[in-house]
Image 1 (cartoon, helix red, strand yellow):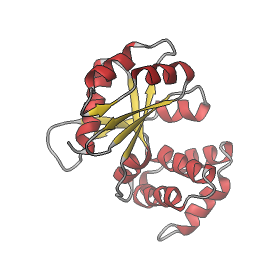
Image 2 (spheres, helix red, strand yellow):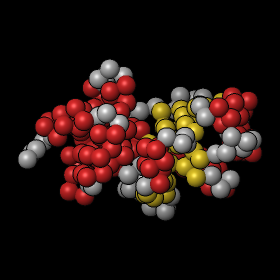
Image 3 (cartoon, rainbow, N blue to C red):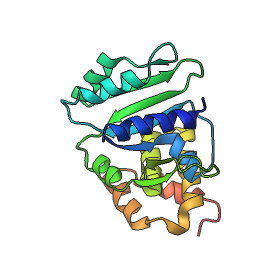
Length: 197
């Protein structure tokens, strides 16, 4: 099973459970910018603190020995607004489920998510909700800053900017760069962009 097939299965289970979700991270920056390999898929899920049904559904859908998902850890993460994961044992592919928080940026980027094909080059109509390019850039810059200046995270943001620039809402990124204390990172990204004006 490929990483995209795993993502398609996860998306189907979440849709069946009527759970709002959004794929983020390097999986999405690879779709919106420059492709690069990653073993982790980051998925933001909107679950009530009392939701025990979704962890049960995920555990029932992804069972040993092919998968590992700790249902108790998932329930604890949901209640505590943390993170839990699903591991595909044979390949090592991992899906990290991040709980949607009340943080203003978290809420904004979740509200702006968009639906795209899981594999733009394949037929079959499988789609998934992903973060908008502006939010992918901001989140990558945020992770870069939080990790002490990760070149990998910064480059991911830079490549998304270079590919998506004609359609980007720059005023939105400007406003959130200030609110998230990312002005230096955002200014540097625009200076370093290929064909920067």
